[in-house]
Length: 419
Image 1 (cartoon, rainbow, N blue to C red):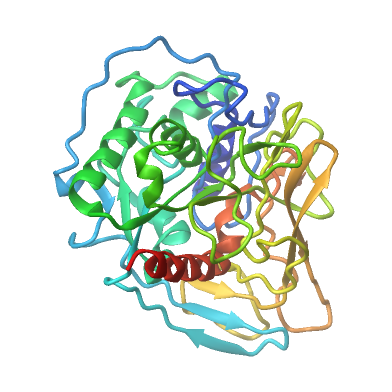
Image 2: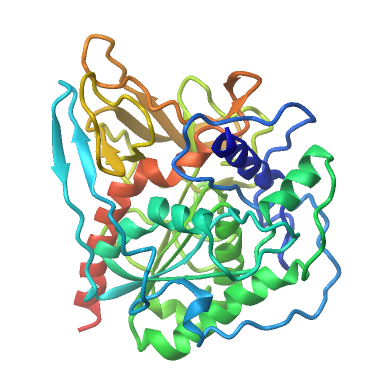
């Protein structure tokens, strides 16, 4: 029950974040949930939160204390650190349609030719408005689910940052008792900026870098890229930007412009210096008219790039990695690995429906086979999948194997262009 509640609170984060020095026209408006019992997701892989919402007025500018990122403890994941939560067991069991299984061992690559700079979503359980810089199980879980597998293609840098906490978000969304104030809303942005600056000055050394995040983390990297990378000298280092569970805008019919002025949408896996962005919904529960994820704005539309089919069209075998949790993935089979793969279970396609451009996910259920029909990872409200939220908690999981493949091809293209 505790995990269900935490996941529910995490989802409410999308409706209640902060706009860090960007206009409402450039940051996604997340769905708003009316006062009602907290929506729940059964057995989520980790409490993963949603994107910041611009409809909340930004706090007055205040000076923020600075975080020293030369201190290893201020990094959640960083090469060479002890007990690195991005260097853990993430083996997977492949569960085939006939119910048979196969073990897939994972191996990272400490000599990967490119880097990944990741900002995690709203997960902090700290009992204050802003989190501290001490990681807990919630931070460890989210990098295990969303990030660690990319370590086969890139060196991973993930700073701790003083994000707006889950408790504060829950209080704001539910009208409950406010949590004590600590710090200011500017602390999170200051930390992400300082971590990025430290990384560039001390670790980058001319290497290509992927900048990625989910939800509140995506809000932060969108702000960071727009302010410090797009059209700046450091854009030359950008292998790609991966903005999950949030919205990047482009003019209708164009691949560049809008949120980022000179960073185009990725169209092939070997293209570099481009952006991948998507929000996922079940095909039979499409986004409501008011759903903020994937929502266009007047003359612009949301970017949707399917990692399993960057050139467009339907992907019939995307490489999803699901948290094993306590589900019965195949009749009579016990799964001992932390993740499972389900080849052929899902079909994904970027579609335009109304004002939304989103990743449509179809589950190819077969009641006659021995495998699970559906991982049932929807955001639930009043006992039903919520069309405002879709499959938000599993945006990264649905695309994880394909993102690994894309980064491998982008890394090769980067190395070839930068001998």
